[in-house]
Length: 108
Image (tube, rainbow, N blue to C red):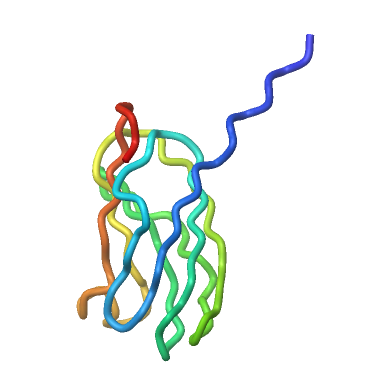
């Protein structure tokens, strides 16, 4: 018997700039999520995912300024609201944060 392949990761585009994080999907189903990060700003940024219970995963590598790209893949198992934020000093406090909803219902 051949084991079934895991389902593909859900892709979520993320735009980074001074001082905002923009997701191109408001919600996803639980599972593997691949964040495709694009930096539209003049400073380097990164992205970390903070779960509903406060657990923070390892941040992405820094995304270079002016069109730099990186990918961050995580598994979001629980339903709830996940915070996405830049972990560079002072960036989240200045507005570099967003929310992604994880729900077993159909994703938007």
